[in-house]
Length: 103
Image (cartoon, rainbow, N blue to C red):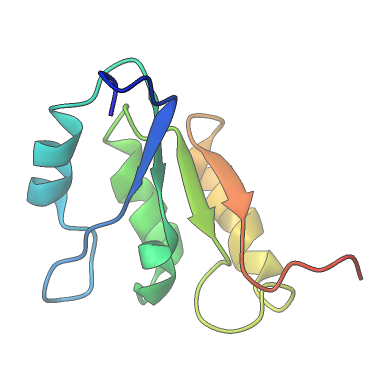
């Protein structure tokens, strides 16, 4: 992606237990450097997205997480999103996605 001039990549890998697949993520991140890395809505399929955010913090190349805060409506998930933001501690930027409307 970098050789093609991409400013970033979007990815998301889960293991058979529906958790962040740390081994595969590390493999993917080993070939990117100096570009934004967004972990996509795969995090919303994880039972505890707040814990998943703690896991993603271990990977300093992950710069953004695209999420609706888990299953269901993003508005109903605002408490989860708030907790995810606290856990990220500014290291990872949350990008709200799915169900976001002008209302």
